[in-house]
Amino acid sequence: MWNRAAHPTPLSIISFGTAPIHYTVRNRLAAVGAPVTGYGADGGACNAPNLPAYTLSIPTAQVFHDVPGGVPGGVGATIDVDLYLVQQKMLSELV
Image (cartoon, rainbow, N blue to C red):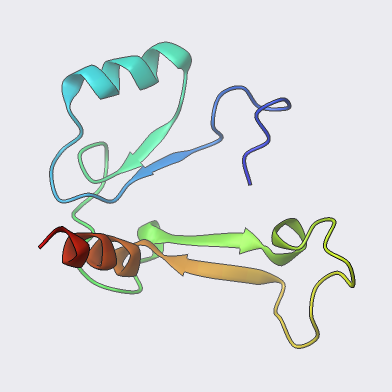
């Protein structure tokens, strides 16, 4: 998770949209030193599930930080989020 106090600039930004990043957004991100990867930056399209460049692995301990009982049993060390699936859900809600 992004700790704004500890890291005023995001540690990484992954573009997983269907169009290149607008130049004004790219310029603003560059001005604050935010590293951008993905579509429209340095990567190919996010057009299929399970692409390593578009999979976030979030440490489970961070997701369950300060949750009573901690990490539930049987949950792995990371929670993987496939940004293609997020993209498709967002696009389906637009129609």
